[in-house]
Length: 504
Image (tube, rainbow, N blue to C red):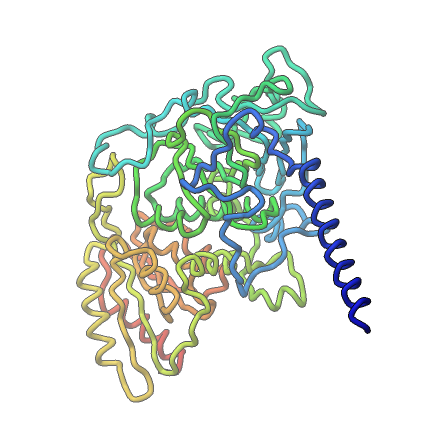
């Protein structure tokens, strides 16, 4: 190519580049990026941090890889009353009282649990119309405060949503009527059903009249806790929140707002923060707030973990890889999946292989501690000679040690251990022993070959941990006491049988 042609070629390229740049400039000038519907009238505020993440970039924590995870979005729902209907996605009926361009509301109802997971957007919350204490205070500052002060009482319109299709217009502008509440948000045995009361408070406003001081774009769980300082009841709340997130198909772990006024319970609250993207209290918000996607998590009392105490249903724990190959509605890996979720939240996955010949025997202890504003700091005695039994187990383990097996007794003083330490202790335990008490709820995170020995006083013959063991597929043993005193030799004899069965 001669010099003249080369020069002409270069000038042509430069002209085309300039023309293309001008076209791109005018395209974006005439087609600006769409604005958030409410952001045109108000300053969009991300409520979780000082430097808001653009709505197009999710700040949600991703779901971790869980070895026992099975699909939650399914083409056909499990049979009524089946194990999977209790622990998995049995929310087979979806009802939508309102569908609209800017907002929607629907509930996913489970006939098996007689409970609903509801979700909506855009939903406006006015914290000033919710009567309850602020929440999140240090325990020592609110000693003596009543539980009634900590639970929410909603004024009419505490929550609002913009009108749309499907809504049956009512004079009082309620989103749903009494019939809807009685069918999909049943009182059941719950004295104060706070989720039902929340939905009952929702009022529908005309299009364009939903005014918000701030907006949360990303999915947010609204949770009300009752016995928030008790490990067993907190696990039911964690499980309900986890199931709600999965059933509604969230792409990441949602933000979470406590719609209650409970004070801080450090060990349990740190787990909420680890499980979800962020945690706030409703009263932390200044002014009204609109949630683009709000999910109402059912009460912990409505989970299979709690209902199993009063309802009889057949359900046995099984490995997820077996259920993937051969589904069985009378078996479940859901508690193992959930236990792995807890472990992953504290970076305790993957689970290390057990060291050959090494048996960790975790003795879950009960020790005095201050739990909540109405607590004396003294725990109920479930095993009157616990220290004597613990010392005997330690002595027995030292005598039992041999070349073939090494027995390591772990002192499980959970009340004074960080949650990560508690979960690591249960993860690494070959045998878990303890008196009936909420600390044994950690069995949801135990490995499937863990063996359980529960010591049960005559006044506490309740099936909580036998059931959890069965739902996890754990080998379970019990020593039923005539009172609250356990003969140390009876305990060590039972342990001796267990370790002998393991080849020691």
